Length: 132
Image 1 (spheres, rainbow, N blue to C red):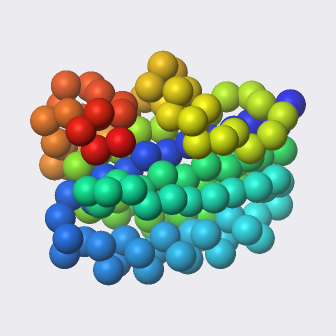
Image 2: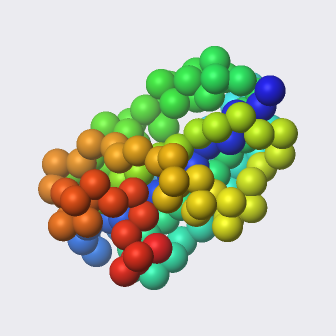
């Protein structure tokens, strides 16, 4: 069964936005060409919050994407650029809508490591209500 994957990232300071945007576009180009990617999307919210959603043929295809190319570079840098990072994945037949993505992140999500956590990240909140 296909695997849906959601990430929520908050860039901790405006000065990190230019390199974040560059690596995001590179990773988007990579995901659109990735073997096993059945769909992907990204959205920007207020307060420097960015979301991604993708649907994968299987966990192996998702892992191959995550550990190679621009996405791998992004994962290494995001722990410095972001003060909030969370993710969730689950089996689903279609790319989830954004409301389902938010629900899954809130109920089943986990935190990703960041070097300079916000107060919400330090409290273990996967989806702080102040800057959804």
